[in-house]
Amino acid sequence: MALTPSTMLPLGTALPFAAISAELEAGHALQVSGEPLRLEALSQRPLLVLFLCAHCPFVKHVEPEITRLQADFSPAAEPEPPLALLGISSNSTATHPQDGPEGLRAQAERHGWRFPYLFDGRQALARAFRAACTPDPFLFAPAGDGMARLVYRGQFDASRPGNDVPLDGRDIRAAIAAALAGEPAPAEQRPAIGCNIKWHPGEEPEWAR
Image (cartoon, rainbow, N blue to C red; front, side, top):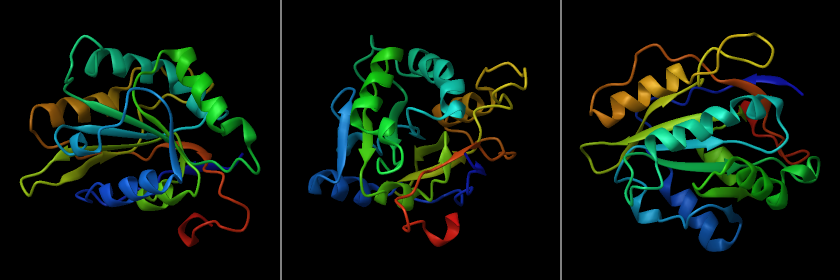
């Protein structure tokens, strides 16, 4: 395990909608669980994209908070909840077979996750987001130009496995609340920290080396 921070993609970056659409259409990205992904709706409301996997201890640590975020901001009782969630796992199954579709599906079922969860087989989505670690959250919000643009990237909160800081999602919740209110996200944004994304052997992007 290599402890890795998020790359802190520049704020204002547009949601890589074309990459998501192309990978799904080509069958390289597979939806392994969750409600059907409606691509046309991704830019219509705030969207929290979470790079996850099944085995990482840092992901396991935040799994309860992900479940709480779903309950608080994307409840099943609302046909169009205020926040959309999208999970993506990009780890290579050549080195980590437990992060393949079966493992991801079991993870989602265990925690009652209803949001779409994608297996990024070619790792093209991780490259499009410049994702570096698990977990690695990206929050997008509709902008005046009709695009969904990045308003927050970074940690859930200061809690880490074994540091005894309460897991409450303080940072990500403040950013979500601001996005839902149409206000700017908090200016101070700290990188997420987690296990590095497990790139296919010999295919690490330059910025991940």
